[in-house]
Picture: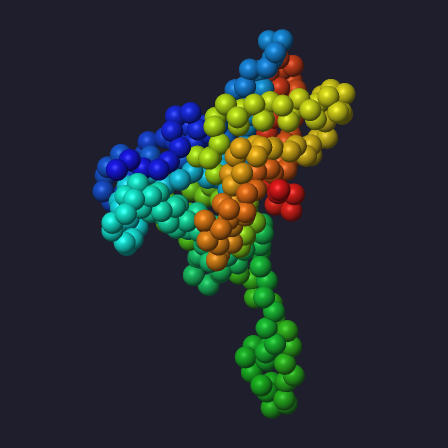
Length: 298
């Protein structure tokens, strides 16, 4: 039975992959391309082409696709009662496998997977500000200086706070370590602030032509409102990506206990995205999506 995923006409086709050699199998596998290499081109009138790029790991954090691993869908299919509508059974299996994938992806952004995994460290990325991303965390402990309760003359010594600098010489979260051991070329495509919830764009649920039209129209709208590139904020402008009533459910608000069917039924179809502008080449302005504000999802 074919997978219940978006076809070549869906926005799923915008998410590019590269080949890598999986460890330890030695087989060639697909993995998502590093966002720094991704660039979408959207032709606009008057010989202008919008170039769309991504930063701050937006590409991995917020653009999600249904699983294409048939074995995972098959496993869910086998759990469901037989008989009845077999096509509906496969659709339910795909939904269950997608839920597992999306929750696993969210788990990769947890402190358990993003705090440093070096023995004796365990500190966050924000505390790794030393040379070579060494840990700069200093812990204070109330103890007897030198570990002695009395000094050499026999007098009692008062406890005092003693500073202990973390000995970690480089940030190494478990998620990145696991990807490295698997042979994946991008170490940590989810690096950054940890999260227990996320707003994702379900690319399989949006026609590619619609996604590209929404990008083009939303950028044009803000450009017109500002009166041109000169007023575009250096920190980015807030752009609404509204995929319309026909694509309700394409935006999923997910947390650790989310049921994907319920999140889809909630019918969200619009998000607010911060986009920066590089207008060096006026015929090919570069718009970089760098942040999605979950509080503005509708």
